[in-house]
Length: 153
Image (cartoon, rainbow, N blue to C red; front, side):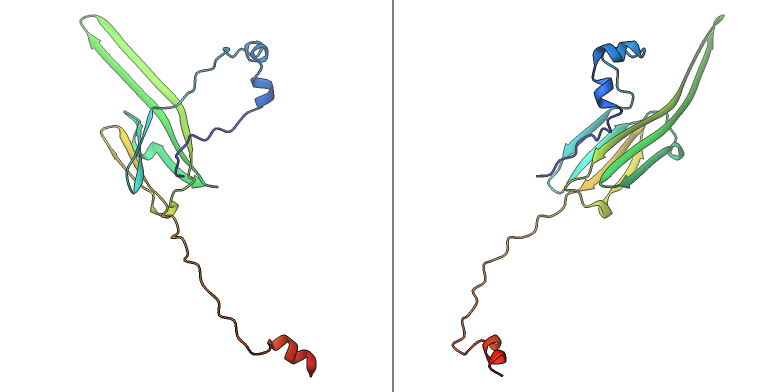
């Protein structure tokens, strides 16, 4: 079966699964997942992964494959400043975002990526299942086996 699933590395899963400990450490009971939006579409020959990274320069995006896990990471650093009729609007956004996906059933050497209009598109070609092997009939010889002939010598 072919799947593309997010890969999540647990960080102290026993400790952080406890609601009391999460609140004690200053984390909300349900922590928001930092990252970016991703859509995965299934095509006959591949999965198409589309990641929304508006305003992120291509040089700030890293795509790696290691231990059957695809990692998309980006360093976000944007500054937007507008001035209109006596008021100033200034907004900054910075940080590091990262998403990971399992590559089970993906032909890793065929992965390609492209970017347009703030959307990173990664093509993940599916591995072709091996054809079922036909049963093979083995002929039985009437001659004595070579093992018995060697033992008589």
